[in-house]
Amino acid sequence: MTDKDAPLRFGQFLLFTGEVILTVILVVASWVVNRPLGGHHLKIRRISIRRLSLHDVHYTGALYDEKYTYTFTAPCISARLNIPTPSYPCWLALTAHEVFYKSTTCDASTTRLDATCWLFPYLFKRTAGPWVSADVDGLRIRVHSSNTTPFWIGRLRQNLAGALVNGDIYRLDDVKATVRFAGLSEPVRPRTRAKSRARERPLSAACPEKGQLDGHAHSELDHAESSDGEEEQYDSDPCHGDSSDEYEDCEADGSSPVDHVDPPPPFLNRETDELRTTVTACQLHLHNPDGRIYSFRTIDAQLRRDWDTDRGSFVLIAEDSRWIRVHQPYQREWTPWWTQIFTSIVQFPFDLLRTVDYPMSTVDLYRRFDVLTVFLQIRDAELVKQGFTSLREKTALFGINWGDAILDAFVKTVVAP
Image (tube, rainbow, N blue to C red; front, top):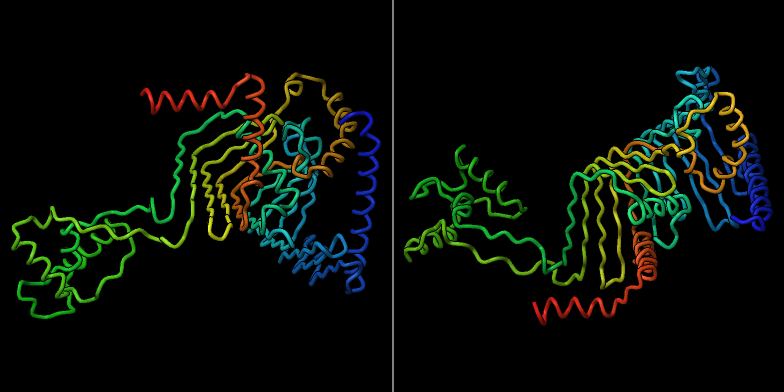
């Protein structure tokens, strides 16, 4: 941000602050009069002053001439005031259960949310600067369309993609990537005749009573179904006539039943032209240029693209995730406590401005979250955009001619291997 842009940004900050204050006044007034005011309506079933808790909170709002509507519900929201101490400098703790947020662009829900507000967190070595630590359990986000992604989700996506493209990978225990085309690369496991016999073996050679299975036959059937790994429909009659006839024909030909392999089924989902790309990683630790550490115990991501309907979806599931700010180099040096307090007080207005511009910058996140983008366009994928931007910059920096590089690779691979 240049000096010329500073007055404009400050004016936008004042305008946004005024809108926030006006919205808060309308929300509180709508609860008092119990009717919508300015598109906002807050309803609280019960308030407990002794426990500082709100029960059955329901809030609806509308912004931008009611083009953007949202609903917030929570069965219980409680607060706890603490006296800050050097060992635990917490002055406020908020807890919410079964939070659900539904808007025009996305839906979000969480089973439990714990937010801890710190007093001078850098001074007491609780965080590297963020004033709030949030512990989110079971966060699920459903984005309706990639071209209408909410601002805060877009910024989080930009930071994560930037960490993958331009950041450092501190740890990666295991990674697996698969690409499948529907009808072409679906896994087909041929079934041997021994597995068929395990499913269709009669109780005796004469098969006197049909429809009965002893314990041994049940165990073989279960073992065959579990080893095959696919859900298939079979006749409940264990002495199916056709299968026994095929088995007798196989023995009459002199071939071994174990070596005989059934022909594979035809291609699956031939009517669907779909691409599925799946990436799984374990113990992934990333460090982005903004001083953030992203750590995931497991992360599963899948991109599905249907070329017939021109639609796609993206699913991201992360477990035991951490999104924590680390200390800057100047913060690692020892300074007197009174200078840290003075710096924190002076820095607080700038932190407030940064919070308004990017709320997630002052929060450390923990736990598991699921993100689902229902309608995804490839041009909206942040990793693709930042990847091509980085590739373009490196191409210009090193003077790479991609035409010559591709031609050389083709010649070395095909013409002169």
